[in-house]
Length: 536
Image 1: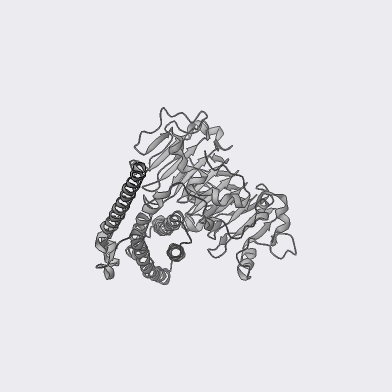
Image 2: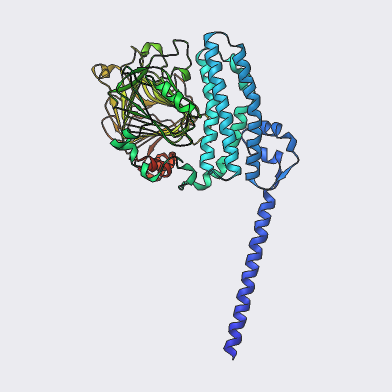
């Protein structure tokens, strides 16, 4: 009987303790929520550009918000609202630009600003409806900011910096930078990105997943491009125009490009999603152009092929720019296609061969040829099992393999070269002793490039990395790294000693640059059927 009372007393004491602990937790949780409550001015002080934040949210300055998520939505709405003013600035440029150079810059900037508006709108809608992850939001916001930076760099190339000043002074870059910083706080909470449903290309069915790398894909082509007499589509652009003209829904559209040399500049617009270029092999299907900055184009508009539509895939094709080393920047491929794949392709040029402009991109079993900054841009991009081939530059020039363009510390972008080979092209080999070749240099302040488990040949300078000109630009803010590389050019004893250079020894430090982490590849690449290594 006494034992029963003891049990009852123990149970009552235990239950009371649980109630007290729960109440304490509830009160502390409520207190934490209250402590987060602040007015707009208080929230704006947490951003990189508080003055711009307070100015454009002035109508809500006395509003009290308890959650960061509410502030994120408010900041995005303000950025989207300001983007329409920026758009009008770009339209006005188009009206005033009469010279070839001004027309080139205004055309680029109008297109890039319009794309930024679409991306801001899609990000805002996706977060409001919870249809996208914080990672995807960070990717799209990174791209939206990169678009503006490309507009500005193009004007600088043609000595027209003042021409685009109305766009610069519209403060849209600062507003997007603020949204990146705000969203980053959510993005960092989950660095191990899970497989989100929204990241699967919606046009891929289970039976399609092995189709991309099988021979049966040729029989699935929607249209065929051929230079043979009597062909319905004799140019690639005509096939794309046809794809844009029909009601094809969200399905994959395969364009089989038969062997031949196609001399044209090709544009795949933002609205043309899920296009696949299927060639007869990189030796046989070649798309070539010769536009260059020396010829009056911006780097952006020199591209032989430019891709903006989501889900682009290319297989067995060479993308080439034949302008030559004396014509400066001349792009073979420019890609801003999210969730894009290039499989068994070749990219041939000299300066600025491959413009990995933005979004998530994957290159597998590809060849990249060039001299100066020949892999550049601000995408989140992985090159896996690729051949990176430095060519012979002009006398007195040095080769720079990469020039990564991360201009904001919160952009989730970078170049990762994994399980690849860095070699001298045949034309460089006879003069390899007189030409310096570097793994990369910092194009923007937060430039980020990593080589992992890659063979590096003797042509690469012992210093490894080059400064931007004769400056110490970005030495403290860049992130350049090497992990598990091998070969005669991989020795690290004489590498640069900049604070931002890293000899990566820990797998945990290398993991953020893998397919799984940098481009969330485990979630969407398997749907393409293209083989990939998710981790190290």
